[in-house]
Length: 377
Image (cartoon, rainbow, N blue to C red; front, side, top):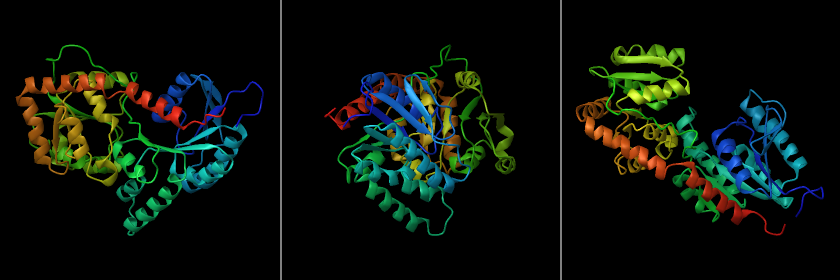
């Protein structure tokens, strides 16, 4: 199985119909890691609406313009991605979106290796995001369709152990490659640990499913402020402003990386209290690792996976994200026990430096590819 052209290298081709060219998982982590570790191969990335180029050893291709409509993307963009994928004539195709799974059998019939990358637990994500009355039934249909194709690909990569456990039942060549932060993502906040100011911080997307209503309520009688950094939809902001706790919120809007570092350096703790939706319970938000790498104790939701990450490593406190009193008590505890808060922050930073980083995951990715690639080249 060879590529056309006497001197051409075999190509590993990543495909996405939905993501951008600097997507952290696809480009910055997986593609760049493969380019660095497989010099005997060419690493290609096919997307829509991007500038074709070679960047950091990765050949980036555009498959037509980006589509505003999700349905147009799932039909027209997927077809354009497939056309470009065939032109490149790779030996292995790595699919990053569920809508691309319909291409897997076509590629398999052409003798190609196919890997499916499950970034999310799609059926549970649908339940959490959909407002349709029959969403439980539709979620089951989605799961059966996804499983049908996943059973037939050559390998599956997932973003969490929970998703991997689901796919291992139908495809033995399954591995979880966690979204642990890159060295460039890790903002190891240095400087004196005692110069804290009277606030805790939330940095990220601000919408109801992330527990912001309950979080703001937790500050109703607090002497501590909430530094709230992120873009807020005006309609949701109007709702938040009606809560009694809003008087103790310092709204910062979207902030850049330098401001984020400075904010975390002075914060008492970092908060991430997502609501217990199916697509949250078994996720591992980068936000947790960002707080840990900054030396902040983490106040997180009491999901089993999060408790194992936060409390078992003694780097924070887990609470019921729908109970404002629990959140308020956790904040008060850290304020009243600064030595414990500091030790939790130091524990979290050590865990990111030793375990929760991309270096270890990169090795697992490389080993998976070495096992999965064709060996008759």
